[in-house]
Length: 290
Image 1 (cartoon, rainbow, N blue to C red):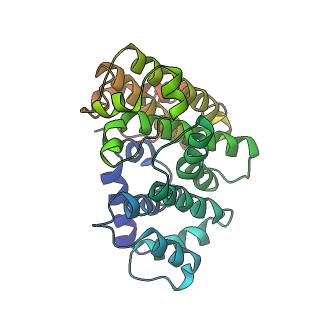
Image 2 (cartoon, rainbow, N blue to C red; image 1 turned 180 degrees about the horizontal axis):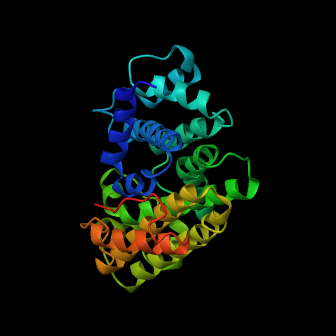
């Protein structure tokens, strides 16, 4: 693999998600590079929908090129993806296509009615990432681990939705299902005005409870992973879990404030995860969060 191409994939991850970057950067080289490629492609898919004015491709162009990957040119991601599928033959293209299906939903479905609808969306845009990562992070095809990876991705997406309520509203999107609004006696007009009261807090907490169920399933079998892979997934889960803690500290203001986990807290979480893996003596190859 061309070193410059891999550096571009790494930079896409470093820019796009500090949490993911710090969680996965101490994997063995080949696994680490594969995570960079997967993230870079998912970022490109996401930007093609959310930032179309700056994206080099539309979502439809990306899909066409992915379906004819052997001939795809015009961006570093295509040779990177070709490398990925050669190096990891257990990798299935279907989750990548499902990921694109999920992003396409953002072009047509702007208001969610039920939790069932939302869960399907969370699978498409985030559970699929768990499916992509599984053959990269471990060498066996483990059904329970696959289900856990999907659950963890879905839980992370719920945290994203909670964190980005205000940003999504400004894009004309409401992911919080209407049935949840009604259950808490909170209406869409109040959501648009950014009303934060006990009803809103209870509604967000209920949404987070669902995420917590998925998180718990997602980290239930990390001991079956290669050690550094298990640490990486554990860190990603811990960093994402801390985002909701920051939402609470911000007084549930997800309309005007973005919940960002401080680096010092990430450092504590790193030590906690290493301790859980018995790696606080320095035997794990983990760098400090900076």
